[in-house]
Image 1 (tube, rainbow, N blue to C red):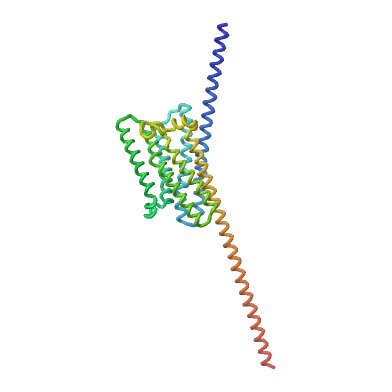
Image 2 (cartoon, one colour):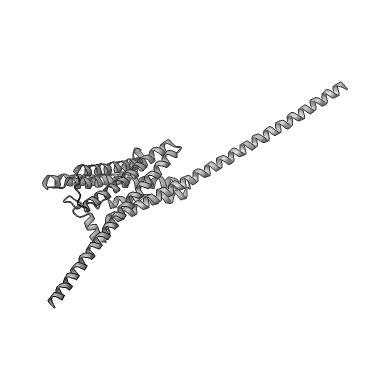
Length: 317
């Protein structure tokens, strides 16, 4: 009897262990899918914007799109890089510190590119724009001061993991303001398109603006660290509160941003085709008018020649 009870307990233990293993594998598979989709969305966005910048007839528009395209490509590669690192950690593979530094460099450059796009799109180089956005910029300045002061204080008083601190600071000081500026810049472009009654472009730019705003908010949830606000606003607390990893929210925002910008490119392409069609019709009309004028001149020349011949005949008679 005792042997049967022991076998039953062992069977239950084995079954529970198998269930935990299957749940762990399912969660890892879901994690891989989320990061792959996250990186793919931004990478596709970057390639699409790069191709659009190469086709744009306006040099200013191309210069505006290239930083955003660079962000999409680099950030997509970064997410796939992080996916590789997660797989290596699951397999307990030794990873050198240089690999983590390369990942942080990719992350920083991608957000710097996004920030440069946000700066150009928001037109912060113009004095009237600075005056109009003075309240958000002042708030952003206080935000920078609080983050930097908190990081310096914690770094001096507590032993902190340097890569985690660098990752959090990149997201706090680069990702959040860059995404906010990009959202503002896209909203400004949407308003200008609305003035020109380019309504398909307006809705798509608004979707991309909303996506970048939500994406910037999601960057506040970083790795847990004894640095304000990472002590409270971190990915673990977000998961405990919502049951959803922040990476899922970022993947959704990446899809929203890519959807909005790719649809905006399509709307611009439709406008370009319509303009080309109008130009072709105008060219055909101009050619027809030229042909009509040439025919009229030919008729006049023939009529004049007929009069000359008739006058010569009358003169001989």
